[in-house]
Length: 212
Image (cartoon, rainbow, N blue to C red; front, side, top):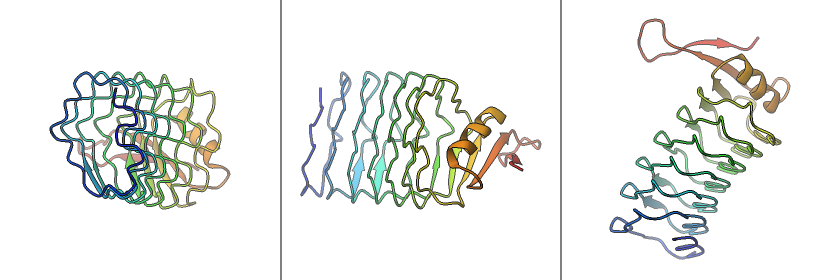
């Protein structure tokens, strides 16, 4: 259990955790929360396959500009509430390795990431998620979100999911059901919701079908 391990170390400017053995870690809640002087954090070496709770793991890391979690195995995680909330200086975030098939709670997951410009959530399986309230709220610089594999049939609370995002946001989704769900969450006349279709030429550029 490394819950709260570095939480609240507000003057910490440098942290090397490459030698940490996290093989048996199950709870990472609040682990780096409010380390709000840290600018860089490299967690590539972290073994996370047994972790079930990542709530508030990076909460309020206000000055964080670089976070390497590209090797995270999140296949056992059930809750990611407020995981990156108020990481207000991160412009990019690579969560492409994330396996979210067991996650039920994504409330406030990316809330108040003011500097984030785009995010690729194409690996996200949201079929088991119930809670997505304020999921991307106050991501005021966000221009593009890829949710091409996400489904929302089991979501019971999704209020304020995109609160205060820019009108220019583009969201890529799986199908018409997801399109109407996201458009409803964005609100009338806000943003562009695009259905992903595999590229006809076998390349990587998607053909897109836009909302009319």
